[in-house]
Image 1 (cartoon, rainbow, N blue to C red):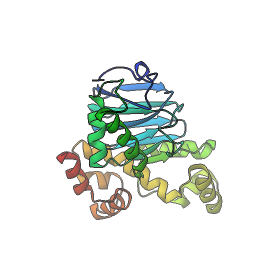
Image 2 (image 1 turned 135 degrees about the vertical axis):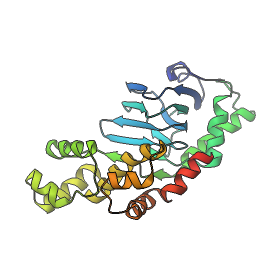
Image 3 (image 1 turned 180 degrees about the vertical axis):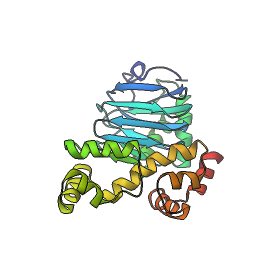
Image 4 (image 1 turned 90 degrees about the vertical axis):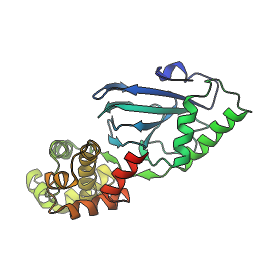
Length: 260
């Protein structure tokens, strides 16, 4: 059983994948750090915000984030959080991206992550424990990517404007509004956004609104309230955005999270 210890205590073990579970109070900040192995960080309970120099990733309850080895990152616990993490060496991590990604956790992957925490740290690769960990590696490789990342630009003017938007996101902002504020043509701004973030302005704006909305919804705020606070013309418009990005309507998504 490996619980409430630092990852550094197990990362050096001679196993392709190792696991640890930790519990954190609401508001806890895990300051900037890095790991020698790639990490799949699973939020069994609660919601986390992971930040790097390249952007931010929201990790809702029952989802996970892939953090490649060597990436400096911090983690903020937006409520009480129980994490189940696995750390993979280079061979086991083969096939997954070299950048951070929020990934969907299937029922099978969820149970494997929970089970892994209670296995001996130096499990026998040839017995049942080893087979569980081997299957866990396969399931991690197959986990789908979710649109819960928010890349941040590096160009100074655009980066500053994005940070102001994140402080008070709104669906009412337009490309033309930003062009006027930044003194850029529409063509220049749209090209810059795509080059700097990999997203169009509207895609980035919707993701920013979603990342602001999810913690509030998970905390119990009403869908209507969140929709209007974000400047959507109606809860239906907000629901359409949410469904487009997440794949289900807010009410269904929240029900699925609470039913686990």
